[in-house]
Every structure is written in structure tokens, then in C-alpha cells.
Length: 169
Figure 1 (tube, one colour):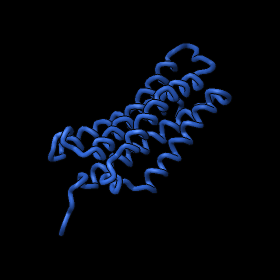
Figure 2: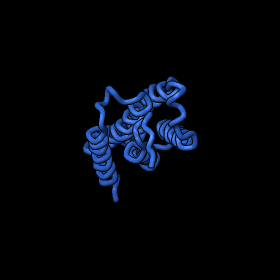
Figure 3: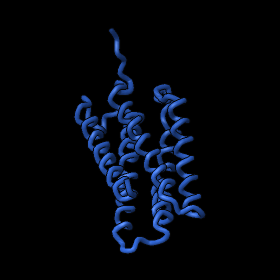
């Protein structure tokens, strides 16, 4: 599979994941503005973890249409990904830190920190790719990390009850 096909497949998965976010919103009993802060953060993470890889994959596909492709194509893609990642990580980590104490109990620490480590690794890969490597796999790895985190958020949104709701049998 060449880079263009891989990026096209990645874009398709990202669009599908974003569509699933709409399904999550539709099947919740309340409207989004009535959701808890934690549930809105989870939805924002789901949308961001699908939107960022989509934009980055489309940017890579765009650069591949240039004939001949630029020598530093993957460096440019990684730079674009960094420009998307840094604000996304900064905003969402500050939102997570500002969660009310009651809602922090609903956060799985192991999962949160595991995804944070993977996200940091993806950020480091992009930085190294911009400065030295110029490799497709490093750019693609960050897309993979974001989509994997999006899938985790989707599964959590579907399987976990809304915050504040207790299930009794």
C-alpha cells in the first residue's frame, strides 16, 4: 500500500468515527448542553481525535497531488500535524484539569495516562520528523494514535452511562 492509499484509508476511518460521534449524541436522552462537563469533554475528545487525523490526512493527500511530490512532504505533514496537536492537547488537558471533583471520580486514571503517554510519543515523533527524519511512518503513527484514542472515546461514550446516572439491577 502506498502513502496515498494509506492516507485515504485513514481519512475514511476518521470520517466514520466522526459520524459515530453523531450517533452518540442522537441516542443520549438529553441534549448536549444538558450533559455533564465530563461527558462534554469526552465528546470533544471523540470529535477532536477524529477531526485532527482527517485534516492531517487530507493535507498529506493534497501534498501528494503535487507533481513531483515535494522532497520534504512528510516533514511538512508532521509540521501541520504539530500545528493541530499542540493547541488540541493544551486546551483539552486544561479542560480535564478543571473538571469538578465529583466528576473526576468518573475518569479512569490508567486509561487517561496511557493515552497521554501515547499522545506525547506521537508529538515527539512529529517533532523529530520535522527536524530530522522526513519519514511517512512517523507521520502516519501520529494519525494512528489519534484515531486509536478516538475509538477508545467512542467505546466509552457508548458503553458508559452518562455521568451522574447510576444503574441498578
